[in-house]
Length: 540
Picture 1: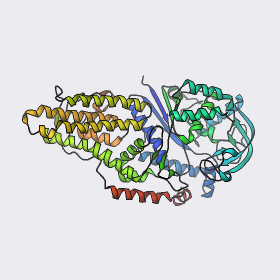
Picture 2 (picture 1 turned 180 degrees about the vertical axis):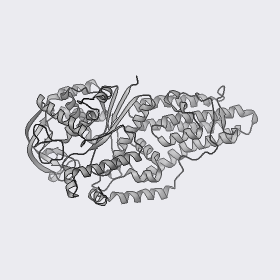
Picture 3 (picture 1 turned 120 degrees about the vertical axis):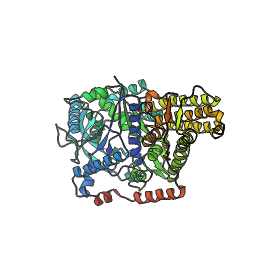
Picture 4 (picture 1 turned 30 degrees about the vertical axis):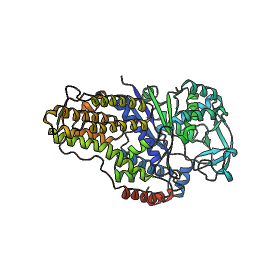
């Protein structure tokens, strides 16, 4: 039986178009799903939308729409974007769906009955934009939100509370016993420090708006976002329903990974595991909290007009360049910065020069010197043959290690080191000189075989990342299907082949100045789109 792998994005809040920061999370999870599938795992990938809350209710009212109309529109536009990005999700959960609301109601009542939720009174400063409460000491000047800078409102209302404090020690022990429960290390340290300051019980219901899941035993209350939204990871698997086979298979399976941005780390590293402890659900997941994509002058923000949207970039440059840039330029434990200059440089230097040119040169030489037909040599002819093969094996080992730890940027860098080494191999063996000597035919075939075999293996490693370019590589090299699989990831599996006699560049070079200017103009145009204008222009 194959091992299971269940990966999730956070469910995205229904507040407008999704930018490349949201797209990064979704592309990263898609890449990991493709990688695990390549390895033979039984995979499941969940994404979706968080559709309840006061902000949705307020915006819908301003637009003279129902909240359901608004979230239906945003859900469809998000699905359209994921289709454009070729995201292979298995399920798209929406918190307005009956299957989800049914589970949330059961969870709330169970926790209430157990005494893990109790009724009290809440007073705090509330930021509607972030759907978050803050104490007076957490606020900025003039009672502004510490996260977005907007004015908060002092809220006093009856509320249900979740007993976080009851599970404080148990959560710390779980983190201590499972060093890879929260990664990267810096995020884990942040969570531990926060817990050790002492956890305050969490407000988990509201009475000031209606758009949400009503508390069954007290319908004046709406279940607040933490219990509602966080439950999606198990409600989508049929937890606590008549058919919980997906829950049993994937949640209780081999690997469960939640991928989130660092801004929602606390909710997933503290509130969610405590909810599961209270429900007596196994804490089988690992949490990866990545950094942000920033602009040169700070965090992306729709409200401040600093956003990069993926759709227009894909239309102009194709899917793979954007996937490559997003996955490579955000380091494992840090933030990344998007600039037009860097984006075009990655296409021209990494994709066109290093990778694309290696493939094109190799095929062209096979056509020119051997009428497209190459066969496996009987032995190595050069000392550098072994060096190249050793580099290939080293790259495969590092790739597996990096990908298993979600260090996709590092995995890509190591693939490019192999691409660089393979380009250097051409310069070391001088195939154009060998071609002039008929007695060197075996040596020349050896060189071209090693280049093609290296490219085949590079294509396999890149297949979860550059999904179209890797297919194009296999097509132009005429690699059989069975030699595009993980279990063929050994140098020398290829016996003979006939490459295409019509090679075409998979990544044409771009005019640096023209394209940088195009992207900058694009950003300037798209940054001025305000959320309310977006909806007024569209038919919802």
